[in-house]
Image 1 (cartoon, one colour):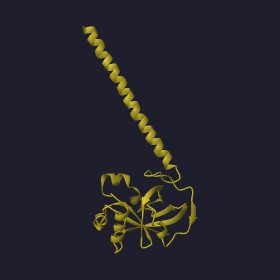
Image 2 (cartoon, one colour):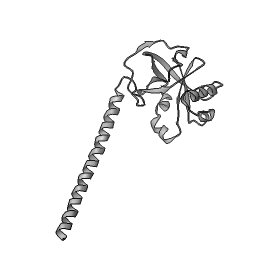
Image 3 (cartoon, rainbow, N blue to C red):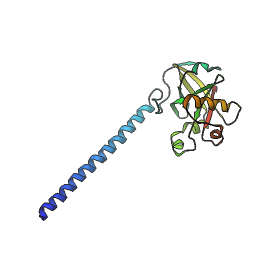
Image 4 (cartoon, rainbow, N blue to C red):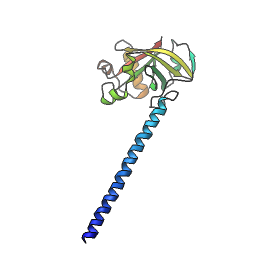
Length: 182
């Protein structure tokens, strides 16, 4: 009986150690795969949906516009910051022919990790926007006040189902940027 019990216990440990080996091998494989995807996306021509991409490699460079109304029907645009040279997909709002983007959740834990680009814009506010295959060299101007802010936020709320308010701008939880010619 003791021999059978000892064999059963030893067999249980072998099964458990095989299970742990398989589990850790799976976890390591997942980490390597995620790392490889993130590395490849960073060298990609532009962003891939919600993943930041590398600098733009394609597109026709054209002069910046003073009237962005042609982007009114666009839900997103691709924007590349210069330092570091990364691109991302952004929500946009065209208000009174002016082009705006936002950085939200800036005070949240997730936002402090995920939303690095608005803080990097403090150091270098130059950007390139790609829309309709064209590249526009622009600069990002952060707005904290102005009569137009309420209208811009209302537009973001209508388009994207958000609940942004001037309080979110005042508290620093939402950063509003206008994209203008350099």
